[in-house]
Structure formats: C-alpha cells, structure tokens
Image 1 (tube, one colour):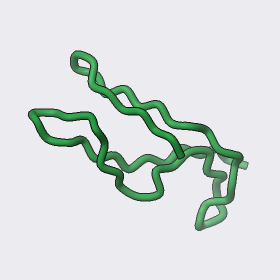
Image 2 (cartoon, one colour; image 1 turned 135 degrees about the horizontal axis):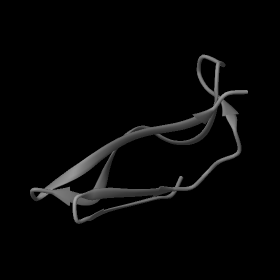
Image 3 (cartoon, helix red, strand yellow; image 1 turned 30 degrees about the horizontal axis):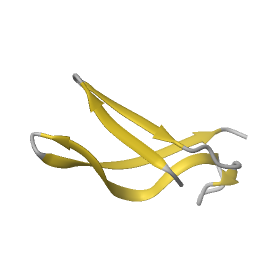
Length: 60
C-alpha cells in the first residue's frame, strides 16, 4: 500500500493506491484501500506528525 500525504493551506491531501476489492473482516463490505491501522505520516500540523487510519470500501 503506497500512500502520499501532504498539507496544502488548510487541506490534508491523501493519495492512496486502490487495491483489488477484498472482503472486510465482517464480510459485509469489500475493502478497496486501507492503511490497516493507524499510520504515522510525513505530513505535519503544528510541527507534529499527522496519524491516519483509513479504510475505503464498497458494498457488494
């Protein structure tokens, strides 16, 4: 999973690779992008790193 994160003005820009849809843990959705937990990024706010937990999914 490749993810790029940056802060532009007052916006957090996240770019993450899409994956082949895979069933979620519950089986109710298909995950198409995920950080698989929280990830510390290189983006900073007030000098502190931004931490992202991201799940993108579709309904089957």
